[in-house]
Length: 316
Image 1: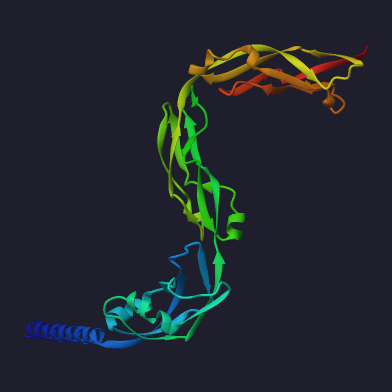
Image 2: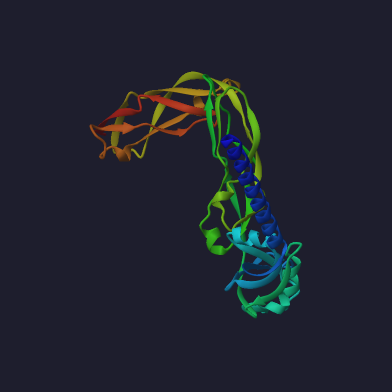
């Protein structure tokens, strides 16, 4: 009999807890369905749809009295910041210090509230703001592509961006801090063919900036390369007429890489190597550095042998 009593007692506890829970849920639903008058703080942003090159610095937030039910009221409790944007293009405003009355924006404010929300009042009575003029500038785009090539392959020419620059609009001090527009980095490895695609502008670095485009197209031409070697005579610059100068060696070996399609077009005469005699007195042991004064654009990697020459100087 004791087992039966325990079973019946357990069932009575379960039923009791069930009705307590059901009553609590019913009470909560009834409360949430009731209307409440809530005081909510809003950050107000003004704009002029007739002149989008002007923005407004608002000096104060507004406090709104809103009549709503409990379900919507919970949303306000969870919101970190309530904000609203209001077009004031139909207001006659001066070009310096400005203000609007809360009564002037009451209807537009109310229209942006959701269903089940009724605006009762706004405070303060007067909202002050100042104009800030925006400026525009065209800036170059940096692709931030990270490229690694397969053996015997290399990039032919520069990365092609379309467009390669875009217009941005911001406050003057923000524009002055920017010299280029960065794309979100993309990484490609073991490339053995040309690639193309879309790059996204890195908006995380462009706070309070409007951009003409948020995506650009790119193309990277990839070709197989080969190596070649030529010998080029060294030219001495800034040598005084009163001195005889000989360099050892006189001929410099150039080892270079170029795309196979361009290799046959490259001639020895396309290279010019120089050494500056003005560096002689500063040099160690009379050695002069060999400089590449000219080379074909299609040549991407050059090694010189040697890259320093010995200078022997005597008077005429």
